[in-house]
Length: 146
Image (cartoon, rainbow, N blue to C red; front, side, top):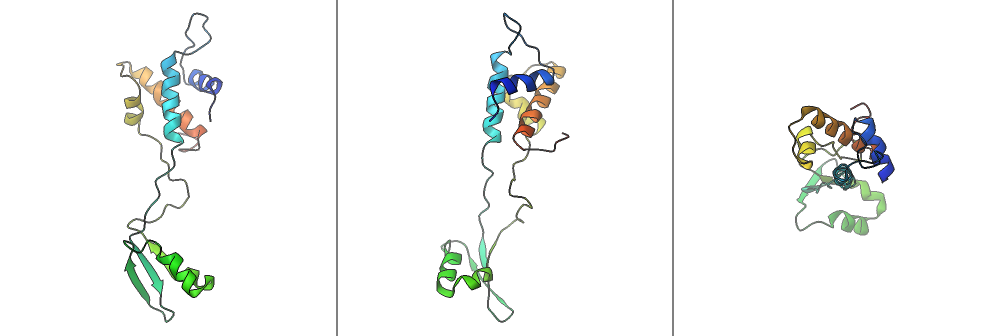
């Protein structure tokens, strides 16, 4: 979790000015924007649900069954046949599983700008995107050189 002090440092490094009576803090909407991005960054990635099971038949072939109404098939198969056969049952998905366990993707520039009240100043919008990317990187989302 990023602290308010870290939010302030990231914002200043992205070009935001410290502006309040004493000149040492950010406007409250910058923190609100950062907290909203942090909440999005901390959401768990969606888990894929299989559509079918593939079971090795022991003779070089496979049997297939729908996942619907068979959600516990793999566990039931292992209970019936023993753990040594656990690799015989595989879930099948409509899309390949991601290569890494973290499937969180960075927000698009448009999604970032939609989180913040609209302003016509393009330079301010660029700073918002830089700031959002810094927060995402602090949460392990996106490439280190974005």
